[in-house]
Image 1 (cartoon, helix red, strand yellow):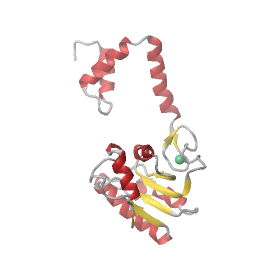
Image 2 (tube, helix red, strand yellow):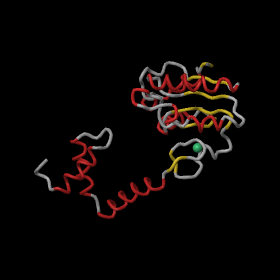
Image 3 (spheres, protein in one colour):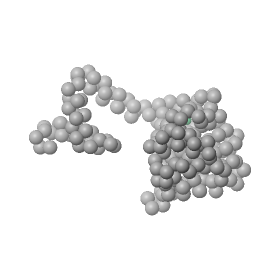
Image 4 (cartoon, rainbow, N blue to C red):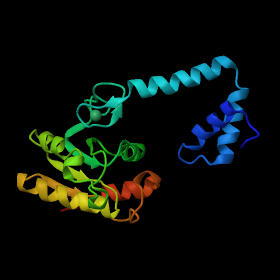
Length: 198
Ligand code: ZN
């Protein structure tokens, strides 16, 4: 794109590095931004920076939030006796969207993946075990149905079962290798309802 000036090229380059944004979309966005009133551009830039600066991990469930304790963990209506284990904040959001789950979550921050050098110590398993020292009735393992997700589910169930806590796995019906966030709400809702005890 040598016909654009350096600064425009730089903007297009940044935008095309975002997920789902190809070079055509990046150009469209870049020119949209350049045509925006200066104050709006300042606000957009400020919103990006503020979000990045203030977002942190919830002290209890490790989801991304801008409070010390996220809105789910601080909601007195949510049962802390049921913990759903998910890989990422986006997976948590997928379950929240169906609006049927009344427990809390535990965000692992990934899945065990020996081929990528990610072992049990690299995800938040120690933190999960610490939470289980409290009054917990059931742990629902909702890691993805990818090889890594299944490996992680097996590992967690072996880790927890000796503690005498009920461990269940969300039902199949979630396509193998499928990212939870791309699955429709009905499928996800069925997967949750049809969970089986491990
Ligand atoms: Zn939380």
